[in-house]
Amino acid sequence: METGRFAPSPSGRMHLGNLFCSLLAWLSAKSTGGRVVLRIEDLDPLRCPRAFADEIEQDLAWLGLAWDEGGSLGGPHGPYYQQERTALYAGACDMLAARGLTYPCFCSRAQLHAASAPHRADGTPVYPGTCRALTRAEQAAKARVRPPALRLAVPDERVEFVDGHLGRYAEDLAKDCGDFILRRSDGVHAYQLAVVLDDAAMGVTQVVRGADLLSSTPRQLYLYRLLGLPAPRFYHLPLLTDAKGRRLSKRDGDVSLETLRQRYAPEQVVGRLAFLAGLQGEPAPRTAKSLLDGFAWEKVPKEDIRIPEGLF
Ligand code: GLU
Image (cartoon, rainbow, N blue to C red; front, top):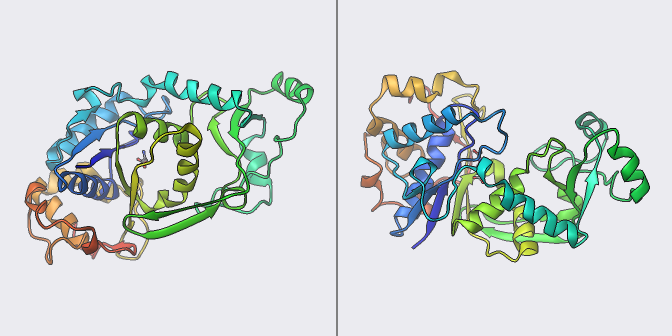
């Protein structure tokens, strides 16, 4: 019996990719007789107003994807809004700092992007370690000008894991990831840290999410190890693309939930998503519940999934 989760970032309305991911996370956990937790990843208070989180709950409910705890429903592992969990994140930062594993970083975003450093699999630059060797006096002088971010110093070590869907994946922490941020200079904690602490605290045993986060997983697994927490099993999903092969994003207004809800009944959306997921041979209407029996990860494609013209 697995515990899965929905972990939406309420910086806007969900798009088809989010729905696809939510449906598969739900089917994966529920098909084992398990549970689903809803955690609202609203770390950045300016980008994630509560109204958006409420809208996401309504959209998930409309699709027929009920969760067992979390969000406004509450439950034994709350609070379920990351904005209300900052004490947990701050405590972990303090603990890692006390172990000498972190350092303050004063680099601006512009400086980071200007550096001709190698880039990570997700396209962001690998931090070149500029602030790693600052003396205490240098740190104090810089802190008078600019509040620092907090970075985790990573060792020159390979992290390898077997994704439940995509198979073996590995990265060299120093070369492919670099020292990464735990807390931004404006005090907002980083996704990488929060997601690890929260999934562990909420008893999550399986994480189903888009393949755009595959390259975050080695960093997260390293944090699980440092913090002495049990890691969940990861299942990364192929990303949806439009008929031209472009990956969907929140900017694609034509596939927003608002449009979908005007055009279709929930079963029509679930049925089309199940078709894209390889769970049925045609886009016939289905309820999420009716898909539980036939669910198997082997049926789900591993490559990006092109949405045929006119399907939605
Ligand atoms: N909050 C992230 C998103 O909406 C998902 C993070 C995760 O699943 O680990 O993209």
